[in-house]
Length: 178
Image 1: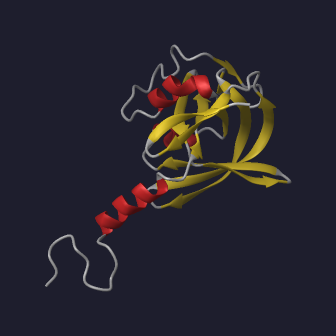
Image 2 (image 1 turned 90 degrees about the vertical axis):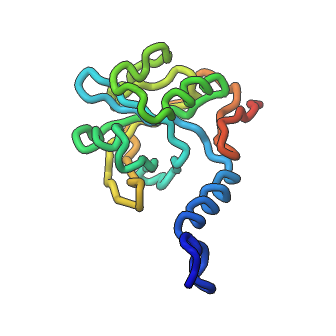
């Protein structure tokens, strides 16, 4: 009889061991750090996201992944426009703050410089290399996260080329600019 938490021989690692091994392995893949934001009424919602990808050029589409129980995910059921800010090297504090679980729902962007996207109404962080504004095309469940694909309504470059932020080995790190 196998000991608790250990898979039988030939069955691969126990589920929690696999989760830990998967997490540790994927932390070695550098990922760009972004902030996904949306606005419901007068309330801004935002979250740090590293699972973001360009999906298509014709039509322009992008995706991000969000935990199924995140506030942003709940609001996506009511609001179909949102934005992604591609963070620059100076946005580390904002990235860390918006990645904190349990942060207050109201006032998430207090003290974080931003402006409104004309196409989405969402907050666009000023400390960004660029912005992409989208309308949700579809949402599909993928385990404990949902994949959100959006059609791009607008895309613009930011004023800086100071480098970006990447998530690597469990930390947010600066990627130097040119």
